[in-house]
Image (cartoon, rainbow, N blue to C red; front, side, top):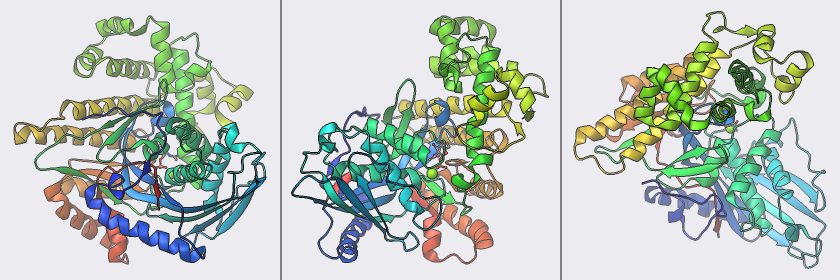
Length: 548
Ligand code: NG1
Ligand code: MG
């Protein structure tokens, strides 16, 4: 069933672990919470923490590289997460600054301390190198939220302003593997800050998500908003349909019930892709290429607003196109010209038809094969109508990128086809919320969901060029061993893959992965590392605070 959830609710305070994990997860993870509290008491010598904040990682089921373009995505939170055991000290008289002590249960993330004045966070410096860099995620969340804290919290006369916040961090999400450890860090940090300042009820989750998205950009990645939203809004046993346009909305959606049951298996290639290092040639470059593609399409469509902010991304171009041409009634005209648009409208509804219309405009714009290839700057200048300084300012000024040529056709084509697959995926889930009367129908829905995931992977590999040899290998093995749909998840260029597998086939699937991928490529892995690299997962809940 799809549930409506108010994005205006605060981060929940939970009394019991059952509310955080699915029943199967409680025992396994409850122990970890207890031992973290005990560890806290030993590393911070003294009492146990006041609370533990939690924020999960996520696996994106479908909708890759379209969040920063404004289209909807469909991730689910996972059980792997970041926990922050926290103790807060308040002074008897109003404090003028707060000291933050951050420790981590993983040794390589060394202890760090910073202090911040109440009137300004200018003194909180981010570090570009060194073993304390991990703390940047806490710092950006701290800085980001600070300016949103209600005046009465920051008021000088408020004796409840904390003087000290002590945090012990424990994470189970492998870093730089596209399961969003970074967003879980910013989200968990925000949750700690809000709770420590007594502001958890004063800033709602929507505002918190917006701040977290902005904050992560300060760490150097031009990211969309999928990860932070998934980490904040997810609820157990539901995937999360997230739309960004015209404003952030979420719709928790259950996957269809079926016999046998199906599950998602995550397989980590263990190839690390650190966007902060490779961003200029991959992630941030893709963001820029889609922006160029948006301006080129807006110009081609002759939009009056072609150079306005409303046309800075492909989603904006779609909206502007229909606004300037008589709104949704315009689909009628488009249908008269295209059987494919008509078919999409009949099968998947108006939103899907609008996307199809734009996909066809992309084909028309890039109909010559020279334009379908990588284009030099001079050609992009002609297509977009931006040149010289205005080109630099429009496309090259926000994040450093390195490229001699830009792929506009392929990136646009991926964006519109992927946006359509997300709609179809969610529609299938929503249409099949009651158990299928016959087993074959249940199976058929899952084959359709799987086919959409496969389609996504093909597009990511061929049009978005963000797959890599190891991702392709893992996907091949998966498809030969019971997966109905397999794709890379997150940004790609390494990291994790996600597979839709009927539960009775999971064991065979995992053992094939071990013998055909890990044994060959990483023969030294321990049993524990293997379990961590390849596992099945159930959609988990989002950020919360647990009072110890
Ligand atoms: P990963 O690779 O998991 O960090 C990134 C972005 C997402 C989204 C995906 C691609 C960040 C923090 N996250 O995910 O917003 O754009 O790539 O779909 O940059
Ligand atoms: Mg990340």
